[in-house]
Figure 1 (spheres, rainbow, N blue to C red):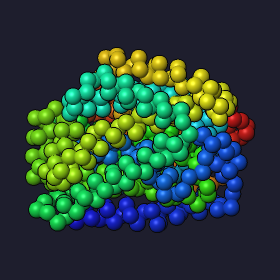
Figure 2: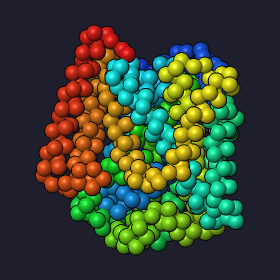
Figure 3: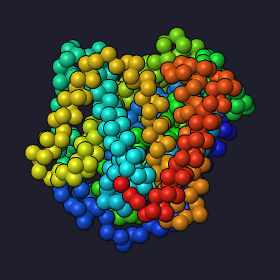
Figure 4: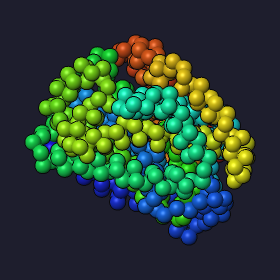
Length: 477
């Protein structure tokens, strides 16, 4: 258990050490006016208590990610602990914190708008297409999968559940943030924490052995096709770094009452998610009696993490576990789906400079998004979904380069804190493109990594040139 506890201690300490460093780096000002005060509209710009925003942000960015992703990552062995810890702090928490601060200081603008401001018009146009489509895809997938599960556990037909979830999504997207999201999310966020804490208690005081990190070798049952670099870094996104998080930060930036809340809400929620992922990874390796036994179970069950979650919760937590399993596999994805649609609405509204206070204008933006989302939900999109994990990390790459630009514009000597993660994640996404059978399919060969390295060098060179050019010319889109 030594490896696990060291990682846990480092994650907790990072909030007080690295988080405080980022506060100083960004010159957090408790007296600065925030968007919720200056742009209050009672719909999206609306002040909420810090504890409530934290729990909403945690559930927004988590969903099933730190549970399912951690279980799939645990198949690689205790090396997953390292990525959750290092990635969660130096990549994910920094990414979420900086994206949140930048949005907060730009009137709570959506990710597409701040990317355009700091990376130029070309990236703005690209993300205006890519990010809303990703949000709609998330929402569409999280219509189908919860409906399938609920139909299997109840006597209510599948199509009825689809209709119920779509109706809920529409209300959550349209209504002021404090009406549904502000009331329900904190409850589910607290339940997500309770689940992790309960499993932690049973894990520590029960008859379980958490494997130690003794090798960096790949223990996955399909190691030949799923190498640690880059596949592990794609598999464990939520819990380490996820581009989706940066699309959610503006929702909460519009509800904050002080810049001092950035560390607990953005950095704190991400570290909390990493701790949840760490616990689930440890549980997965221990519950089945070791990494090899976990791999045997996952291989026999088609790598279905949802089945593993249900078995783990039912066994380790009894009746309460059954309820929490439903939370993990049904409610958590639904709560990610509705905020995905809400985020898409805000992105389009920001692009069009379209006031969202009147409900009619919210309808004008939302109805086309739901028409597209529902259409996708009834398509054969299983293949498309397999590409979402890569697209999600590609979005984190763009966000990291945006953060680097923001720091360089301020003349900060610490732009390296985002530059190194930006280059690393660029390599992860580039090499995955050549390694994975989803794309070129060269496998874990020297050629695949060489091509990935070459693409990374080209992208890094172009991005640094673009950033310096924009800084020198003072240009924004």
